[in-house]
Image (cartoon, rainbow, N blue to C red; front, side, top):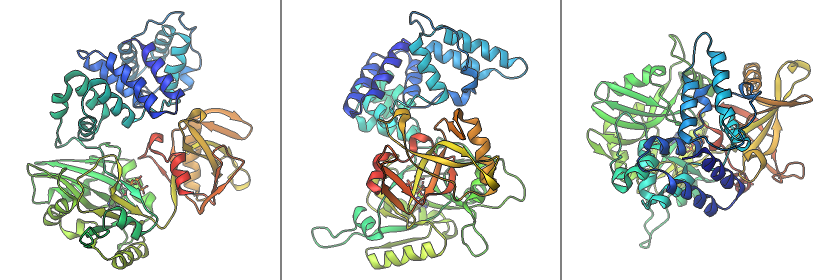
Amino acid sequence: MQLLDVVTTSTAVAATRSRKAKTAALADLFAAADPDAPLEVEVLTSYLAGALPQRRTGLGWRSLADLPDPATEASLTVLEVHTAFERIAALSGPGSQGARAAAVAELFGRATATEQAWLRGVVTGEVRQGALDSLVQEAVASATGASLRAVRRAAMLAGSTVTAARAAVTGGDEALAAIGLELMRPVTPMLASTAPSVVDAMSKAGADPDEEGEPSPVAVDTKLDGIRIQVHRDGDEVLVATRSLDDITARLPEVVEVVRALPARRVVLDGEAIALDAEGRPRPFQETASRTASAHEEGAVAVTPYFFDLLHLDGRDLLDSPGGERLDVLDALVPEAHRVPRLVTTDPDAAEAFAREAVAGGHEGVVVKSLDVPWEAGRRGAGWVKVKPRLTLDLVVLAAEWGSGRRRGWLSNIHLGARDQSAEGGFVMLGKTFKGMTDETLAWQTERFLGLETHREGHVVHVRPAQVVEIALDGLQRSTRYPGGLALRFARVLRYRDDKTPEQADTLDAVRALA
Ligand SMILES: Nc1ncnc2c1ncn2[C@@H]1O[C@H](COP(=O)(O)OP(=O)(O)OP(=O)(O)O)[C@@H](O)[C@H]1O
């Protein structure tokens, strides 16, 4: 497949707001993919689904500053580009800088002006065709005739849309069906939708009375403000993965120890790891976060795993079992000290009281869960509904301003954007904040944002939209100043989120719904 085909499709997808048109353009491309070329399908999918190669190549804006003159005719294939990036990624040691520059010049010298611009965008993370996982999954289903359900399920179980697309294109339904839950291979996590109150959450999760007037019980879980962990055990082997499916086993030996002590040989658990003080209240989130951000050191603050779901036990897959059944198996296996506090009830008053107690105990809120739905990966459905008294958004930093006075020398006031496919650059600015930053945060963010710098305007350093930050706010107000028509009220930084990519940040539509 020619690179130009991918560039043309990617550009067309970015240029339209219509989901139908996006899917159709992508489907045309997948229909043209060669079923006998699995690697090509993988590469194609990973570029389109936003798994950008820059993480591995180590290339950034600076290494792409002086590109050779573009070629006049398109000739590059997708596989040639892939091979070139792989070669660049493998370079290390003395002389590698020169070799990298030479390889970049060779690759870009073979690209036309349009291809150069797109490739540069892909490498620096600027190209955001909005062809996220779910769109690509729809396109693959439509191009191959496989059912969308089968594609989605395979992607969830493999933890990867790339794997699902390769299976669908090269082997159709049969290959998709062969992808099952595999021990030691993390699956896409189930996510929660949001409700403004416990009562709303209960009704969303299906607690309302049925035709016979019987209310259904729901589980009300404490929402712990730690780090999501998915733990796999296969005999003596244990794997601990993050929300983004990165392997952090070596960083959390105490989690491994707890799982090794369980009376099960093969198990997959879902939960949260958190650092608590002697009274059982959460320690500052940064302390928990520091444990997953760097290698384990003796004397570091300990985290405790709390599990809230179970997907597999000793040969039995429970993904398709209703929530209530999974919780029964969880309760029988994991001691209470390592389970998330939970109340199963039909009574809204009892649920509210439980939620108030959770917040009084320093926790974030509750997650109300249906006892009837199977495990639904990646979707923000009605199966899990979170209620947090504090209003928060996950936004992307678009720029940062040099501070003055006590903050001279530090990048301080940050510009915050929500995801919006129709906006130039893919993000629309909603406001700024310099609140909620410790000296440590200021030092960290100064280094981080200088590393992401694209250009400067006066005291404003513009950055590549790569860093997600969780913001607390008092609300939103109408604004003529910002292009989205909305501005944040009293925004302050809660924390930088390295477990989320910009594609997972909140969208302008979600912010509008909140307003
Ligand atoms: N009892 C619980 N059940 C499910 N998730 C929980 C629970 N306690 C804490 N969590 C955390 O809450 C998250 C669920 O909310 P959501 O799917 O919206 O993820 P998120 O976008 O990371 O949300 P947030 O920023 O609110 O943590 C999970 O990823 C998990 O890390």
